Image 1 (cartoon, rainbow over the protein chains, first blue to last red):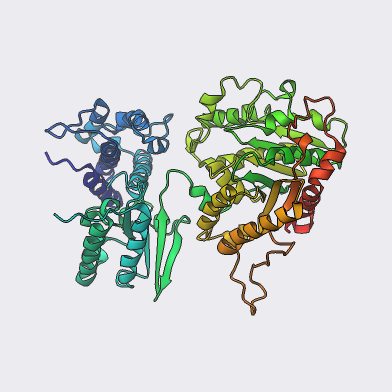
Image 2 (cartoon, rainbow over the protein chains, first blue to last red):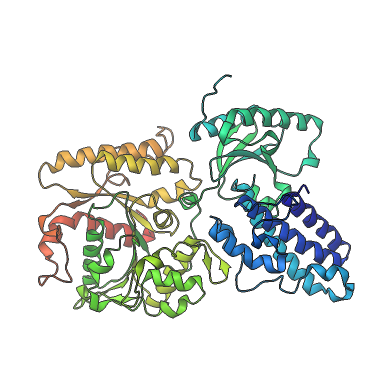
Length: 140
Length: 439
């Protein structure tokens, strides 16, 4: 599988924006979480995370979706010279605590305005951390 | 195979500026070159790839190929040689970052450099916003051992004698000195500056804030007072693990730069203490502590120096960097050179040489080029006494070499300190307490 977390992060983020503009909250929420996950994994790749031939990360931290990755990213980045990026993530409040990848199989009514806004803001923050890593040259 | 000449850090930027100049305004009137943490250089364009017509795409393509090849290890693959601000979340913030420095302006084209550094950004940043009004002074030396801390302690002593309340921060965290000069062990407060930073990191700075200032016994019978915020306190315990956590850019769960955190700490204690003057003792050298205290705290700055080629060379690194500082016009008026350890013999000759070297440093870097038709040019002659390069003087004195006033029975000898420091202290008082706080 030709994994490209960086491109995936930006297209999911862009599409989340389009869905939000069209009031398609449930799928927008899903994509905010996936975009954030891909953005953090882009940085983790730059900090040395490796992939198995199938495209799955070798490191256990990298095998999480955003609801778990939020916390895992902090220790991964701190241990690999990325504490600058780790410091941008609040270890005390995980805004994706109530996000799960399987919500795509659930009824749309579980996703409220407030929930999406919370995830959108958190994803935007993570996209800004990715920008920082790009400008730093850590992500090529 | 042809061996190509290696490209080094400093050539990279020159080459990138040349190639970018050659673009003219074909890709926009404002272009930003980003130099990343390793020194790698690429171009940041406004908008996004869709905004480019075929001509522009071709121009960018040619440019990227040429620059990628020319920059060698300091470049990227041609398709990675540029970024679009439109692809970044905070696109306009990054394109117009206050950290960008104008490097080329010609033919309607402006080329900026945005230097992404691990440390050292503070030397080029705007002053921090402050709420308190009291004057501040930073004591800085590019090298240590020039009598900076001794001068600080003696001046604080004299100001307290005059009835002033002086608040001293020992921010020389890697080598705290003023703390022990002004406070004997039994006068230390419970906590110090390193404790503040560690506890602020987890959001409870206010607990230590109330217990990190103590009164120096040096001024105990005076109408004024010396209040000291030391680097460490009685209950600090193991210093190094705390020091190692001082420079983080977080405060509680939030993000806050180290400079903003220092400003916050100083302000909180200023608000509680209402001092007549705050003295910030900076660590020596080109460290980020110094960057913040010298250019960002709104302080008058004493630049301590001895007349040695080591000193002037080290200062020239800093001053040359300031040539590109967007706000050099604002803070250069707050600088004042101090000649430390001026020898007892051959004083006039010594000071003359010192003045010449100091003048060269200012003239070549931060004075305006003198033009006879511009009376407003910020420019001075070598022997102009009101100039910042014209040094205040601290004379070398045998008795001050083992200066330890809170532990020696005799304390501070008025005659000795007047002989050594009268020039410095009187001038410093005029500078700081004169109307408008400006020279």
